[in-house]
Length: 395
Image 1 (cartoon, rainbow, N blue to C red):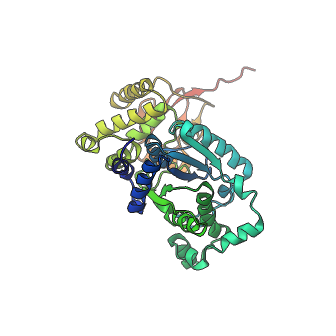
Image 2 (image 1 turned 30 degrees about the vertical axis):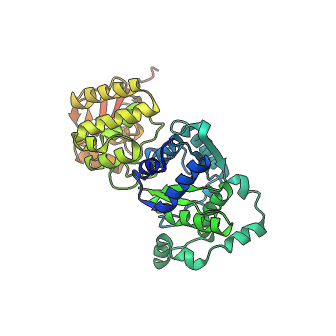
Image 3 (image 1 turned 120 degrees about the vertical axis):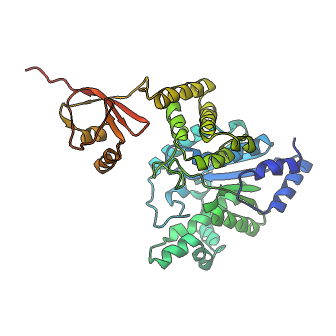
Protein backbone atom coordinates (compact mmCIF):
# COMPACT_ATOMS: atom_id res chain seq x y z
CA UNK A 1 0.00 0.00 0.00
CA UNK A 2 1.37 3.41 -0.99
CA UNK A 3 1.75 6.18 1.58
CA UNK A 4 -0.75 9.06 1.71
CA UNK A 5 1.85 11.36 0.10
CA UNK A 6 2.48 8.91 -2.77
CA UNK A 7 -1.26 8.47 -3.32
CA UNK A 8 -1.81 12.24 -3.34
CA UNK A 9 0.84 12.70 -6.05
CA UNK A 10 -0.86 10.11 -8.29
CA UNK A 11 -4.35 11.51 -7.65
CA UNK A 12 -3.35 15.12 -8.43
CA UNK A 13 -2.14 14.35 -11.97
CA UNK A 14 -4.46 15.94 -14.51
CA UNK A 15 -6.83 17.50 -11.96
CA UNK A 16 -8.06 21.11 -11.99
CA UNK A 17 -9.55 21.61 -8.51
CA UNK A 18 -9.26 19.66 -5.27
CA UNK A 19 -11.57 21.02 -2.56
CA UNK A 20 -9.70 20.74 -0.44
CA UNK A 21 -6.25 19.19 -0.81
CA UNK A 22 -5.73 19.30 2.96
CA UNK A 23 -8.99 17.38 3.52
CA UNK A 24 -7.97 14.84 0.88
CA UNK A 25 -4.60 14.33 2.55
CA UNK A 26 -6.31 13.79 5.92
CA UNK A 27 -8.80 11.31 4.44
CA UNK A 28 -5.98 9.32 2.83
CA UNK A 29 -4.04 9.19 6.11
CA UNK A 30 -7.16 8.14 8.06
CA UNK A 31 -7.90 5.46 5.46
CA UNK A 32 -4.43 3.97 5.95
CA UNK A 33 -4.64 4.25 9.72
CA UNK A 34 -8.08 2.63 9.96
CA UNK A 35 -7.43 0.19 7.11
CA UNK A 36 -10.70 1.34 5.53
CA UNK A 37 -10.85 2.08 1.79
CA UNK A 38 -12.37 5.41 0.83
CA UNK A 39 -15.66 5.58 -1.08
CA UNK A 40 -15.02 7.26 -4.45
CA UNK A 41 -18.10 8.36 -6.38
CA UNK A 42 -18.64 9.48 -9.95
CA UNK A 43 -22.04 9.82 -11.56
CA UNK A 44 -22.90 9.33 -15.23
CA UNK A 45 -26.27 10.14 -16.77
CA UNK A 46 -26.93 7.66 -19.62
CA UNK A 47 -28.04 10.27 -22.16
CA UNK A 48 -26.24 8.47 -25.03
CA UNK A 49 -25.48 4.77 -25.56
CA UNK A 50 -21.70 4.87 -25.93
CA UNK A 51 -18.88 5.74 -23.57
CA UNK A 52 -16.35 7.92 -25.41
CA UNK A 53 -12.81 9.04 -24.53
CA UNK A 54 -14.19 12.18 -22.88
CA UNK A 55 -15.99 9.98 -20.33
CA UNK A 56 -12.86 7.93 -19.76
CA UNK A 57 -11.04 10.92 -18.23
CA UNK A 58 -13.10 10.35 -15.07
CA UNK A 59 -13.05 6.58 -15.47
CA UNK A 60 -9.24 6.51 -15.69
CA UNK A 61 -9.04 8.52 -12.46
CA UNK A 62 -11.48 6.08 -10.84
CA UNK A 63 -9.23 3.22 -11.97
CA UNK A 64 -6.28 4.94 -10.29
CA UNK A 65 -8.24 5.06 -7.03
CA UNK A 66 -9.01 1.34 -7.40
CA UNK A 67 -5.33 0.56 -7.91
CA UNK A 68 -4.62 2.52 -4.71
CA UNK A 69 -7.00 0.20 -2.83
CA UNK A 70 -10.19 2.29 -2.64
CA UNK A 71 -13.81 1.41 -3.46
CA UNK A 72 -15.41 2.97 -6.53
CA UNK A 73 -19.11 3.77 -6.81
CA UNK A 74 -20.04 4.01 -10.48
CA UNK A 75 -23.36 5.76 -10.16
CA UNK A 76 -25.68 5.57 -13.16
CA UNK A 77 -28.14 8.45 -13.02
CA UNK A 78 -31.05 6.65 -14.65
CA UNK A 79 -33.45 8.84 -12.63
CA UNK A 80 -31.63 12.17 -13.02
CA UNK A 81 -31.22 11.52 -16.77
CA UNK A 82 -34.97 12.11 -17.06
CA UNK A 83 -34.29 15.72 -16.03
CA UNK A 84 -30.94 16.21 -17.75
CA UNK A 85 -27.94 17.99 -16.25
CA UNK A 86 -28.28 21.73 -17.05
CA UNK A 87 -24.56 22.41 -16.47
CA UNK A 88 -23.18 24.56 -19.28
CA UNK A 89 -26.39 24.41 -21.31
CA UNK A 90 -27.92 27.46 -22.97
CA UNK A 91 -31.46 26.07 -23.17
CA UNK A 92 -33.80 23.60 -21.48
CA UNK A 93 -32.81 20.00 -22.27
CA UNK A 94 -35.55 17.85 -23.80
CA UNK A 95 -36.59 15.04 -21.41
CA UNK A 96 -35.59 11.49 -22.34
CA UNK A 97 -37.89 8.48 -22.35
CA UNK A 98 -37.50 5.76 -19.73
CA UNK A 99 -36.96 2.96 -22.28
CA UNK A 100 -34.08 4.82 -23.97
CA UNK A 101 -32.49 5.64 -20.60
CA UNK A 102 -32.63 2.02 -19.41
CA UNK A 103 -31.18 0.80 -22.71
CA UNK A 104 -28.31 3.31 -22.50
CA UNK A 105 -27.72 2.50 -18.82
CA UNK A 106 -27.29 -1.21 -19.51
CA UNK A 107 -24.87 -0.39 -22.36
CA UNK A 108 -22.85 1.81 -19.97
CA UNK A 109 -22.68 -0.98 -17.44
CA UNK A 110 -21.28 -3.40 -20.04
CA UNK A 111 -18.70 -0.93 -21.37
CA UNK A 112 -17.36 0.27 -18.02
CA UNK A 113 -15.76 -3.15 -17.46
CA UNK A 114 -13.25 -2.27 -20.20
CA UNK A 115 -11.75 0.34 -17.87
CA UNK A 116 -12.65 -0.42 -14.26
CA UNK A 117 -12.06 -3.59 -12.27
CA UNK A 118 -15.69 -4.64 -11.76
CA UNK A 119 -14.70 -6.73 -8.74
CA UNK A 120 -13.81 -3.47 -6.98
CA UNK A 121 -16.69 -1.45 -8.45
CA UNK A 122 -20.14 -0.94 -7.00
CA UNK A 123 -22.53 -0.08 -9.82
CA UNK A 124 -25.60 1.70 -8.45
CA UNK A 125 -28.67 3.27 -10.08
CA UNK A 126 -30.13 6.36 -8.41
CA UNK A 127 -33.68 5.39 -9.36
CA UNK A 128 -33.35 2.88 -6.51
CA UNK A 129 -33.82 5.61 -3.90
CA UNK A 130 -35.52 8.40 -5.83
CA UNK A 131 -38.43 6.26 -7.04
CA UNK A 132 -39.15 5.32 -3.41
CA UNK A 133 -38.79 8.85 -2.04
CA UNK A 134 -41.98 10.27 -0.52
CA UNK A 135 -43.16 13.74 -1.48
CA UNK A 136 -42.68 14.99 2.10
CA UNK A 137 -39.04 13.83 2.06
CA UNK A 138 -38.49 15.45 -1.32
CA UNK A 139 -39.92 18.77 -0.12
CA UNK A 140 -37.70 18.63 2.98
CA UNK A 141 -34.75 18.17 0.62
CA UNK A 142 -35.67 21.35 -1.29
CA UNK A 143 -35.37 23.30 1.97
CA UNK A 144 -31.61 22.62 1.96
CA UNK A 145 -30.97 25.01 -0.96
CA UNK A 146 -32.16 28.49 -1.92
CA UNK A 147 -33.23 30.13 -5.16
CA UNK A 148 -30.51 32.76 -4.70
CA UNK A 149 -27.90 29.96 -4.61
CA UNK A 150 -29.23 28.52 -7.85
CA UNK A 151 -29.43 31.75 -9.85
CA UNK A 152 -25.88 32.61 -8.79
CA UNK A 153 -24.50 29.80 -10.96
CA UNK A 154 -23.12 31.11 -14.24
CA UNK A 155 -25.13 29.02 -16.73
CA UNK A 156 -28.48 29.85 -15.09
CA UNK A 157 -27.49 33.49 -14.65
CA UNK A 158 -26.59 33.80 -18.34
CA UNK A 159 -29.86 32.22 -19.46
CA UNK A 160 -31.96 34.48 -17.23
CA UNK A 161 -30.08 37.57 -18.48
CA UNK A 162 -30.92 36.48 -22.05
CA UNK A 163 -34.60 35.97 -21.11
CA UNK A 164 -34.28 32.21 -21.61
CA UNK A 165 -36.22 29.75 -19.49
CA UNK A 166 -34.77 27.78 -16.57
CA UNK A 167 -37.15 25.04 -15.46
CA UNK A 168 -37.80 24.13 -11.81
CA UNK A 169 -36.68 20.61 -12.70
CA UNK A 170 -33.28 21.99 -13.71
CA UNK A 171 -33.10 23.85 -10.40
CA UNK A 172 -33.55 20.52 -8.66
CA UNK A 173 -30.87 18.63 -10.59
CA UNK A 174 -27.90 19.70 -8.38
CA UNK A 175 -29.93 18.81 -5.27
CA UNK A 176 -30.66 15.33 -6.57
CA UNK A 177 -27.03 14.79 -7.58
CA UNK A 178 -25.95 16.04 -4.16
CA UNK A 179 -28.36 13.67 -2.42
CA UNK A 180 -26.73 10.76 -4.29
CA UNK A 181 -23.58 11.57 -2.28
CA UNK A 182 -25.58 11.42 0.96
CA UNK A 183 -27.00 7.99 0.07
CA UNK A 184 -23.67 6.38 -0.86
CA UNK A 185 -21.81 8.33 1.87
CA UNK A 186 -19.07 9.30 -0.57
CA UNK A 187 -15.67 10.42 0.72
CA UNK A 188 -14.61 11.83 -2.66
CA UNK A 189 -16.62 12.78 -5.74
CA UNK A 190 -15.13 13.28 -9.20
CA UNK A 191 -16.59 15.41 -11.97
CA UNK A 192 -15.78 17.66 -14.91
CA UNK A 193 -15.02 21.34 -14.38
CA UNK A 194 -18.56 22.15 -15.56
CA UNK A 195 -19.90 20.09 -12.63
CA UNK A 196 -18.31 21.99 -9.75
CA UNK A 197 -21.55 23.67 -8.59
CA UNK A 198 -23.34 20.30 -8.37
CA UNK A 199 -20.41 18.67 -6.55
CA UNK A 200 -20.29 21.45 -3.94
CA UNK A 201 -24.04 21.06 -3.31
CA UNK A 202 -23.20 17.44 -2.41
CA UNK A 203 -20.73 18.68 0.21
CA UNK A 204 -23.34 21.01 1.72
CA UNK A 205 -26.02 18.32 1.83
CA UNK A 206 -23.68 15.86 3.54
CA UNK A 207 -23.06 18.45 6.28
CA UNK A 208 -26.84 18.90 6.67
CA UNK A 209 -27.18 15.12 7.07
CA UNK A 210 -24.39 15.05 9.70
CA UNK A 211 -21.90 13.36 7.37
CA UNK A 212 -18.28 14.28 6.81
CA UNK A 213 -18.30 16.33 3.57
CA UNK A 214 -16.85 14.74 0.47
CA UNK A 215 -13.69 16.06 -1.15
CA UNK A 216 -14.47 17.44 -4.60
CA UNK A 217 -12.05 16.70 -7.45
CA UNK A 218 -12.63 18.21 -10.89
CA UNK A 219 -10.93 17.18 -14.11
CA UNK A 220 -10.69 19.07 -17.40
CA UNK A 221 -13.15 18.54 -20.21
CA UNK A 222 -11.47 16.74 -23.11
CA UNK A 223 -11.71 18.49 -26.47
CA UNK A 224 -12.91 16.35 -29.34
CA UNK A 225 -11.23 15.56 -32.64
CA UNK A 226 -11.99 19.08 -33.91
CA UNK A 227 -9.72 20.47 -31.18
CA UNK A 228 -12.28 23.16 -30.35
CA UNK A 229 -15.30 21.92 -28.40
CA UNK A 230 -15.63 19.32 -25.67
CA UNK A 231 -15.95 15.76 -26.92
CA UNK A 232 -19.60 15.01 -27.54
CA UNK A 233 -21.60 12.59 -29.65
CA UNK A 234 -24.04 15.37 -30.57
CA UNK A 235 -21.14 17.41 -32.02
CA UNK A 236 -19.76 14.45 -33.97
CA UNK A 237 -16.24 15.00 -32.59
CA UNK A 238 -16.11 11.96 -30.32
CA UNK A 239 -14.11 8.72 -30.22
CA UNK A 240 -16.22 5.89 -28.80
CA UNK A 241 -14.50 3.04 -27.00
CA UNK A 242 -16.85 0.83 -29.05
CA UNK A 243 -15.56 2.18 -32.37
CA UNK A 244 -13.70 -0.30 -34.56
CA UNK A 245 -9.92 -0.37 -33.87
CA UNK A 246 -9.11 1.29 -37.20
CA UNK A 247 -11.62 4.08 -36.54
CA UNK A 248 -10.14 4.79 -33.11
CA UNK A 249 -6.60 4.86 -34.49
CA UNK A 250 -7.53 7.04 -37.48
CA UNK A 251 -9.43 9.55 -35.36
CA UNK A 252 -6.53 9.87 -32.92
CA UNK A 253 -4.15 10.50 -35.82
CA UNK A 254 -6.43 13.39 -36.90
CA UNK A 255 -6.28 15.20 -33.53
CA UNK A 256 -4.52 18.61 -33.62
CA UNK A 257 -0.87 18.41 -32.50
CA UNK A 258 -1.38 20.92 -29.68
CA UNK A 259 -3.79 18.54 -27.90
CA UNK A 260 -1.30 15.69 -27.60
CA UNK A 261 0.01 16.72 -24.17
CA UNK A 262 -3.53 16.99 -22.77
CA UNK A 263 -4.61 13.64 -24.23
CA UNK A 264 -1.56 11.91 -22.75
CA UNK A 265 -2.10 13.59 -19.37
CA UNK A 266 -5.77 12.65 -19.10
CA UNK A 267 -5.89 9.31 -20.91
CA UNK A 268 -2.58 7.62 -20.02
CA UNK A 269 0.01 7.20 -17.28
CA UNK A 270 2.91 7.83 -19.70
CA UNK A 271 5.95 9.96 -18.81
CA UNK A 272 4.97 13.42 -20.07
CA UNK A 273 8.56 14.69 -20.34
CA UNK A 274 9.37 11.88 -22.75
CA UNK A 275 6.26 12.65 -24.82
CA UNK A 276 7.33 16.32 -25.12
CA UNK A 277 10.58 15.23 -26.78
CA UNK A 278 8.80 13.17 -29.44
CA UNK A 279 7.64 14.37 -32.86
CA UNK A 280 3.83 14.98 -32.81
CA UNK A 281 3.24 12.27 -35.44
CA UNK A 282 5.24 9.77 -33.37
CA UNK A 283 3.27 10.78 -30.25
CA UNK A 284 -0.06 10.30 -32.04
CA UNK A 285 0.90 6.89 -33.35
CA UNK A 286 1.99 5.81 -29.87
CA UNK A 287 -1.25 7.16 -28.34
CA UNK A 288 -3.33 5.42 -31.01
CA UNK A 289 -1.62 2.12 -30.20
CA UNK A 290 -2.08 2.64 -26.44
CA UNK A 291 -5.81 3.36 -26.76
CA UNK A 292 -6.52 0.54 -29.23
CA UNK A 293 -4.49 -1.90 -27.08
CA UNK A 294 -6.52 -0.90 -24.01
CA UNK A 295 -9.90 -1.60 -25.60
CA UNK A 296 -8.91 -4.36 -28.03
CA UNK A 297 -5.40 -5.87 -28.15
CA UNK A 298 -1.77 -5.09 -28.96
CA UNK A 299 -2.09 -7.13 -32.15
CA UNK A 300 -5.04 -4.96 -33.28
CA UNK A 301 -3.07 -1.82 -32.42
CA UNK A 302 -0.07 -2.89 -34.50
CA UNK A 303 -2.32 -3.87 -37.42
CA UNK A 304 -4.03 -0.46 -37.27
CA UNK A 305 -0.69 1.37 -37.33
CA UNK A 306 0.48 -0.64 -40.35
CA UNK A 307 -2.83 -0.17 -42.21
CA UNK A 308 -2.80 3.58 -41.49
CA UNK A 309 0.73 3.88 -42.85
CA UNK A 310 -0.18 1.86 -45.95
CA UNK A 311 -3.32 3.90 -46.69
CA UNK A 312 -2.30 7.42 -45.71
CA UNK A 313 1.47 7.48 -46.17
CA UNK A 314 1.61 5.31 -49.27
CA UNK A 315 -1.83 6.58 -50.42
CA UNK A 316 -3.22 3.08 -50.93
CA UNK A 317 -6.82 1.94 -50.57
CA UNK A 318 -7.78 0.13 -47.31
CA UNK A 319 -8.03 -3.65 -47.57
CA UNK A 320 -11.62 -3.56 -46.32
CA UNK A 321 -13.87 -0.95 -47.92
CA UNK A 322 -17.62 -0.83 -47.35
CA UNK A 323 -19.55 -1.39 -50.58
CA UNK A 324 -22.68 0.51 -51.54
CA UNK A 325 -24.93 -0.26 -54.49
CA UNK A 326 -26.37 2.64 -56.52
CA UNK A 327 -28.36 3.14 -59.69
CA UNK A 328 -26.38 4.22 -62.73
CA UNK A 329 -26.27 7.99 -63.27
CA UNK A 330 -26.67 8.82 -59.56
CA UNK A 331 -25.27 12.28 -58.85
CA UNK A 332 -22.08 12.58 -56.81
CA UNK A 333 -23.95 14.46 -54.06
CA UNK A 334 -26.65 11.77 -53.82
CA UNK A 335 -23.92 9.10 -53.84
CA UNK A 336 -22.12 10.77 -50.92
CA UNK A 337 -25.37 11.02 -48.94
CA UNK A 338 -26.31 7.40 -49.67
CA UNK A 339 -22.81 6.28 -48.65
CA UNK A 340 -23.20 8.23 -45.37
CA UNK A 341 -19.89 10.03 -45.78
CA UNK A 342 -21.59 13.43 -45.41
CA UNK A 343 -24.46 14.61 -43.23
CA UNK A 344 -25.99 16.83 -45.92
CA UNK A 345 -25.64 17.81 -49.57
CA UNK A 346 -24.38 21.22 -48.46
CA UNK A 347 -21.50 19.50 -46.66
CA UNK A 348 -20.86 17.52 -49.84
CA UNK A 349 -20.71 20.72 -51.91
CA UNK A 350 -18.30 22.28 -49.42
CA UNK A 351 -15.98 19.24 -49.55
CA UNK A 352 -16.01 19.26 -53.37
CA UNK A 353 -15.06 22.96 -53.35
CA UNK A 354 -12.22 22.10 -50.94
CA UNK A 355 -10.92 19.39 -53.35
CA UNK A 356 -11.57 16.77 -50.66
CA UNK A 357 -13.58 14.36 -52.86
CA UNK A 358 -12.12 11.81 -55.29
CA UNK A 359 -13.67 9.14 -57.47
CA UNK A 360 -11.37 6.44 -58.81
CA UNK A 361 -8.29 8.51 -58.00
CA UNK A 362 -9.47 11.70 -59.73
CA UNK A 363 -10.52 14.90 -57.95
CA UNK A 364 -14.22 15.68 -58.23
CA UNK A 365 -14.70 19.35 -59.19
CA UNK A 366 -18.26 19.28 -60.56
CA UNK A 367 -21.04 18.86 -57.98
CA UNK A 368 -23.40 17.79 -60.81
CA UNK A 369 -21.16 14.90 -61.86
CA UNK A 370 -22.97 11.58 -62.40
CA UNK A 371 -21.62 8.19 -61.31
CA UNK A 372 -21.88 5.98 -64.39
CA UNK A 373 -19.48 3.16 -63.50
CA UNK A 374 -18.16 1.28 -60.44
CA UNK A 375 -15.23 2.78 -58.54
CA UNK A 376 -13.79 3.95 -55.23
CA UNK A 377 -15.25 7.07 -53.64
CA UNK A 378 -12.85 8.85 -51.28
CA UNK A 379 -14.00 11.71 -49.05
CA UNK A 380 -11.42 13.52 -46.94
CA UNK A 381 -8.41 11.45 -45.97
CA UNK A 382 -10.13 8.63 -44.09
CA UNK A 383 -13.48 7.78 -45.70
CA UNK A 384 -13.65 5.25 -48.53
CA UNK A 385 -16.64 3.55 -50.19
CA UNK A 386 -16.67 0.99 -53.01
CA UNK A 387 -19.44 2.05 -55.43
CA UNK A 388 -21.24 -0.82 -57.14
CA UNK A 389 -23.66 -0.04 -59.98
CA UNK A 390 -26.99 -1.82 -59.77
CA UNK A 391 -27.60 -4.16 -62.69
CA UNK A 392 -30.63 -3.45 -64.83
CA UNK A 393 -33.25 -6.16 -64.56
CA UNK A 394 -33.82 -7.97 -67.82
CA UNK A 395 -37.35 -7.84 -69.18
